[in-house]
Length: 557
Ligand SMILES: NC(=O)C1=CN([C@@H]2O[C@H](COP(=O)(O)OP(=O)(O)OC[C@H]3O[C@@H](n4cnc5c(N)ncnc54)[C@H](O)[C@@H]3O)[C@@H](O)[C@H]2O)[C@@H](O)CC1
Ligand SMILES: Nc1ncnc2c1ncn2[C@@H]1O[C@H](COP(=O)(O)OP(=O)(O)O)[C@@H](O)[C@H]1O
Ligand SMILES: [K+]
Image (cartoon, rainbow, N blue to C red; front, side, top):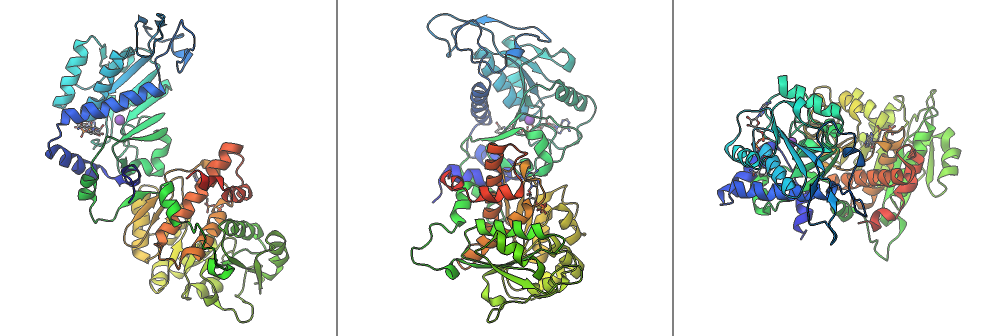
């Protein structure tokens, strides 16, 4: 049984689902005001950790940015206080200065409670809200903070210079495109280039698609409340989120289950979900053919490197046996890079692509637990793509394999397949495969779901937040990655890794989409680790294969 924290960290909700979950909590007796108090208290405490009071005049300066106190646009404040962080000798404190952006709904209410708490902790607090009508609870909080003497501005130009801002303009209640003065204010706030902590989500983002509704706050931190909102896991939102974290406010799992129920779920891949699928530990008594036999079909005279990278990705998976079909002329090259693999040299077309599969004697496609085809093939390798699609083997199709599949007619071709099929397109390949599915850039999760439903395949749509769907509508999203992976060849490595993993576990009653999710997670974690050690510029595809093998990844778990 997974613990609560692990279960909560997998959950992804839409605005509608979040509203229904909250409704259940309120209907069960939790007062709305009490929940707001609790949530905002957690936010205020987290803010104090990230931006502790700026301390002046004593030893051990612990403030976040000295620049905030000098060179200010507006009034700087100084108070003498014995705050919880003071030592026995009285110190002079200069409070950190916070601008609180308040919207008309409960996102604004959360922000006002944060304002009050930070004020009492010694921060210098200013409130900005251009609205004249507020929800009742929000209005009460506004009245109270004003009674405390916290300055309140309706014109953005009047808001004094701050060290950081807290964005409580809109949360999941945003329904319409932002225009006019509020849009202008958001643009102005972004131009100030101050750190901004967004409550729940950066104001202006669509909660489900991550689309920018006119304009949006560019946050440095996003504190997602209670459960991960789907929009925060969509590529188009990433530029706006900064560092995103979940503020868990103890939503009962029973309420989450009651709302999400049996409907297909969207889930975040976590280290625990990835680990559960890895073929570890190995049984003590085993042999190479029991640990999976993968056939890779890849490469051409033109794209020899793609074959090497795919093969190195497969090697990193720990697969028991690796066979690699390449054009005959590439055989010496592959042997020199992967001495342990069985290299199958195949007859070539005039252009140097694989013309047909020529397996060794006593071997046919049924000898393999899985096949991965595509990287570096060129579009001249049509015959072999047709042959493996017609086979009954678990199959991964990538790169030129996908382009050939698109020419064959994606949906009618795949509907005939009985065995497992996995497609791993990037956005361009996806559009060629599925020209009738609405632009995947606008809602990647919806697009990948439709693709899986139409083909009966598991579809992995590559991107900054790779999304994986099975034909029943279950979606996994990879919540962590690095732009260091945006380099030629890193997709080839993923195909090999996934192939090797699939060959090892396909017979173990593990859901195929879980295997795909684990490969995507492993690939990204290796990229993150490599980028930490070598910067985002240091993760070429070959280096990535070295990091895939790093045991640190699994020791971390
Ligand atoms: N009830 C509570 O105590 C809790 C509050 N939470 C907070 O409440 C938020 C949701 O609150 P709400 O449902 O009030 O919604 P929001 O505060 O997100 O925004 C809704 C308000 O904005 C207005 N609005 C929507 N689109 C607009 C536009 N384009 N231009 C101008 N005004 C627009 C609506 O009329 C409404 O007044 C969450 O995001 C979260 O911050 C919860 O997360 C936690 C529990
Ligand atoms: N900005 C990014 N952030 C995280 N991962 C990325 C980013 N851009 C690309 N990737 C990952 O890098 C890989 C690129 O694959 P692909 O486009 O097939 O490249 P290639 O065909 O050159 O190998 C995919 O796994 C993708 O998810
Ligand atoms: K917000």
